[in-house]
Length: 129
Image 1: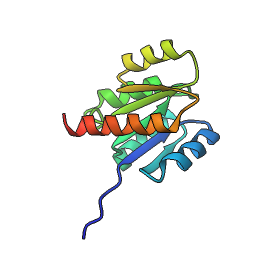
Image 2: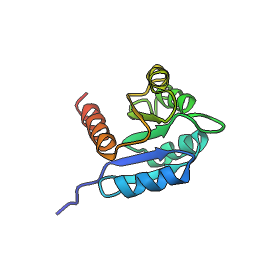
Image 3: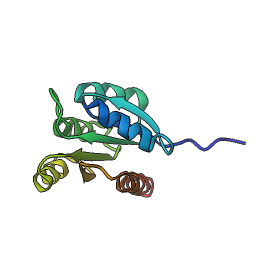
Image 4: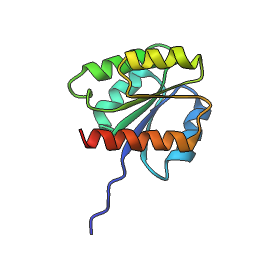
């Protein structure tokens, strides 16, 4: 009997504690990949072809907004849903994230049930487009 493939989620955040928190919270449900910068994420997305990207806005170098724009403007990656997260000014960051092409936004501190629900909703929506 074939095993059902777990959905693959790439988590992009430059803070180790956030990566560990998301790993412990989401790894039972998804196959997770990790990147600590926008540049690393762009390379890893092409290698792993995740089903969804969960990405922080504020990162040194190539930030999450520019990374999202690059993902959404590339034919190889434009179909991948992007869920942006931030601990800064919620309304302003949400507007900027959506303007950059993000499919959804969540504020830090994260509530795992909310993140899990948003991921499932986005994955379902993209399958049924």
